[in-house]
Length: 114
Image 1 (cartoon, rainbow, N blue to C red):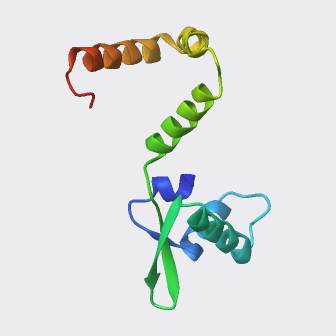
Image 2 (tube, rainbow, N blue to C red):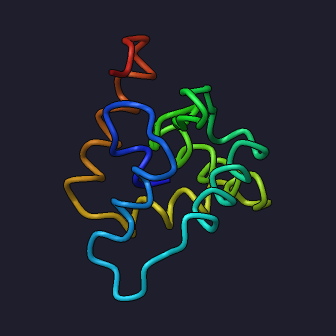
């Protein structure tokens, strides 16, 4: 997913493979990358479009949206949201905490969060 999120355009399996194997000690096989790409399509994380005899793959949503979904999923699994949110806020770097606080201020004031 990191390769697809970092790309400026949809990629063929061969392009993903080239990026992944760029500095790899043990290169991946083409079929391995193709299988993973197809599984990501089946899970709804990636979309594919025909490109000649092959397909090009692109993420269906931004990395940020995916991470937010993971965080909200983890939060809903807890019975005590307040305790989890407090621990999360206390665990983050000061700069991140300031950004979170500013986003919460904008949200509660009715101003859109960029």
